[in-house]
Image 1: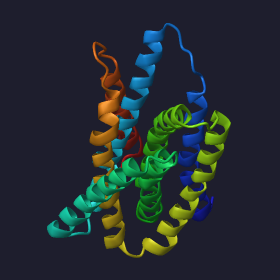
Image 2: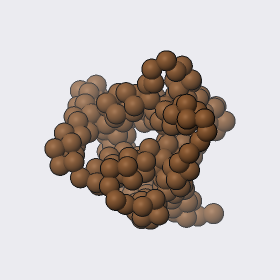
Image 3: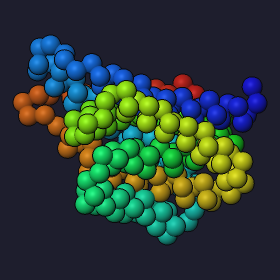
Length: 238
């Protein structure tokens, strides 16, 4: 298979995980009710664990390869500050699209990094694609529930919107592969920027939502999400 075709597949499949997660959000009533609550919070925590795996196992290791310490600090913190400002803006606007924008804010930079990383290391590219897919499933699940709860949009409309968003993955991935792969310092900067933003997102949005009083299973979802990232890294030998 040609590399550019493989890039399209590797960036499209993680994107498709978003509408798949949204479809699962349509299964409203799990009985008993405590199990429904536990499952929802565990799914959120799983997404947080997968995001943390992407930061720790791929984005930061790739990001620190080609930059000096000052640029590492600047790029990493810039990502966190950018996500914070986006969070503030979305909170002020309180628009139905806020969840979609929040998902794109980490998906697009990751897809860019994936395409560029694949040009250098196919194993690392495969690993990153798998981790992005793992995180997008619970992100799609959670975002769909929040959008349908706070707006008049139906599940089918949200799934359609998420499917269109998935098409941005191949565009970003091919851009990273053909345009950015010749600039390793830029790829490192994008990886660190995405890592900083994701880390902010984990502790601002995901971790607080995952906590559930008098329930102890949801944190195991975070452990499972991170563990799958570790398994993937060992499996590809990256």
